[in-house]
Image (cartoon, rainbow, N blue to C red; front, side, top):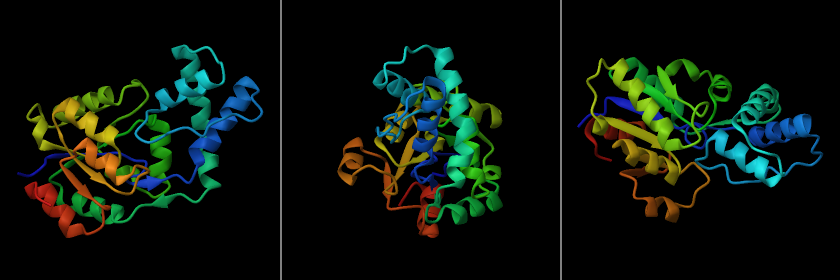
Length: 230
């Protein structure tokens, strides 16, 4: 079995942002709400930007409503570019080689499935010239629930494939149990890599279809994408 659509998570799967997100969140909280030392040391793994924003509002006693959340995320994105440039973001092993080979093969539709809002997703990937590799994406701009983002990405993939796409022809590539859950929500398969923040035991409990330490070992990953075996 060959997967026709590949949906990639970003943080912990393709890149690490070096703490830029926390720095930008803290600056946005200070700017909008005059919080001098905001608490931003929360769990980010597998989260959407909207769910992170809601938790930060709750922790700091800020009334939540969607408009306030969107205003905050817009300012966060404004600050994220500078925050990333002042850090040392990391491109994870094997990523560029895999994306380049997939692009050259021109057989797979490549998309993003991320809780990041689209502006921040592009900033992160542009740091390594990766944004052009992707044809489309499901982003955290419109949904707080990652499963809804996955459903949106799947619908876009179906349209781009001319309506001929079955869920089991989609492979989600991520690094947390949240990626497993959203794959199950749309009937896709999932490859989890061990480059994220989650312990292996928690990944095993989530029962991904496949696990690999990272995206290096190009021939092994290539075989998985084309045959469903690893």
